[in-house]
Length: 349
Image (cartoon, rainbow, N blue to C red; front, side):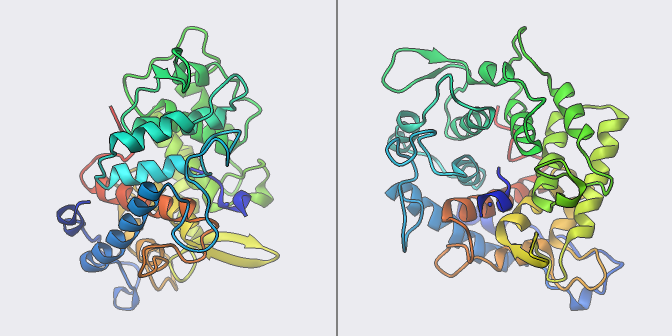
């Protein structure tokens, strides 16, 4: 997952089973557009197909100026395009089965060493787990050495990291019950949850630089998802999670989309909307907000708004990159569908 501001940041049978949540009764349902089952099927099928073609061709897009998805030459620091973990998780969540060639391409290109940041490690853990590798016993390309990426992440200090990185780390170490915390760890899921809560601002949101003036829906959504995944049971954490969900409800634009403010102008986009949908999909009592209207003047649900950015080709209109755009739209679609089955897109035991 990422901060969109900073980047600028299924089978057919399964698709047909996508449910539709009814609009919230307090809003005039007759004037609200929701994503019907048929609309979801058409749009998700298109974005899913586009992502599959990107993976097969190892390209960050299928038109215009593109680069490789996975390449040490193109990305010396990480070996992969920004947003690759969400891209892989989105495909996995929609039922894709990665080929041996695709899995090996990811594994041989990822750059992981002592200089890898907590964000690098978190992305690698999520991406590798999505395609079927064990991040606790991963063989580095070109060596016989196996490394424990989960342990390596746990040994990184989180106190001076941004909320986005803290959230990424908490989501990563919470993906599997088989992930073990080493005795030399510098944080636990509970302590990291408390650290994220500490950075919640007075308006109930979170900001990438921990200031109230910079609070945005992207960072807030990531924090909400991470707190839900961390499963800390304290009243403080649960209260912060609920307040974060309330912030997201208030931050929706009239057209159902989410975005950020730049030079005093609202900038709705698919990625921010996807982040909010993923956050709403973390709890059964907030799932209904993903495909309903809940604020006066709202004309469409977030799910309808997000899928409206999907072009006929499956690419995402206005995306900073198709890796980021298609990846997060697919991840949000998968999160919503799996939440209806009481499952999380991030649970990969």
